[in-house]
Amino acid sequence: MRRREFIHFLSCSFLVCPSVALAQQGGKQTKIGWLSPYPPPDPRDADWKNMPAKMLQTFRQRLENLGHIEGRDVAIEFRYADRNLDRLPALAAELVAQKVDIIVTVSTPATLAARKATSTIPIVAIAVSDPVGQALVESLARPGGNVTALAFSVGLDVFSKSLELLREAVPGLQTVALLVNPANPVHELAASQMQAAALALDLRAGVYQARRPEEIATAFQAIAQAHYGAVCIVSDTFFGSEHAQIVKLAMTYQLPSMYQSRQSAEAGGLMSYAPDPTDQVS
Image 1 (tube, rainbow, N blue to C red):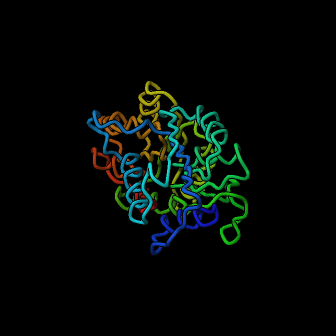
Image 2 (cartoon, rainbow, N blue to C red; image 1 turned 120 degrees about the vertical axis):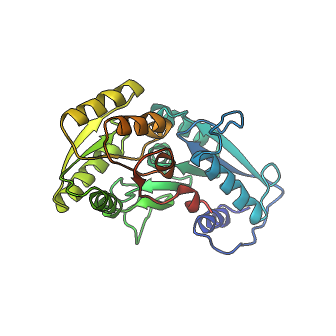
Image 3 (cartoon, one colour; image 1 turned 90 degrees about the horizontal axis):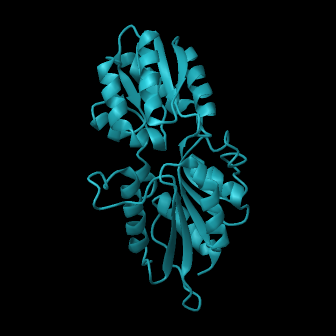
């Protein structure tokens, strides 16, 4: 299978294009690298059918729908950071060393790590935020480079809408706390964008940080003591793994909460607003 044809196939699979016929050359398997910040899916885990597992399941199903069977004409090299973002660069380097034909990345941190590891292997990203602002592409009209993706957001719009909905749901809201993870390279820019979006909506926004489980409780205590009217949790692998604690703390302190994952809203959070990453795979 020629690399250009396979890139076209993956791009079309993310964009829900019609099936395309791809030819194998000499029976050689196409090797895909799968780089994820999450733990590997585990059927023994009660929560194994979570978003990351669904994304992989959807990806495999889309491959099969297009006539490509894992183990036959396609091989997948999996690398999981197990929610430790610091591991992503080394894992990306391993995939490059394996000479994969293409790297599929889950999340912006994984895409950034892969982009730093290679400028030649094509990268197809799932759920990236602000690809231009993160310097993953030159522009939306002319991306250039070796990264292609469907973006989680392309600027302020998703943040502005989140805060707008939160303000509508909480009458008289004047202040909102933003919970970010300083270990996530995306969150500094995201916090800046959200503060700008809040200012445009006449809201005062304060930024609070947590990178370890115990720091989440400390952050919520500080948010409550500062009498913020609501809290917005910026999407993050670590926060996703701690969604039960976050939701419980928001309820304990009676803080209306906005999330960027449906999972947290279903667990008891007030509301969420964001695209479903599994839709970007199918």
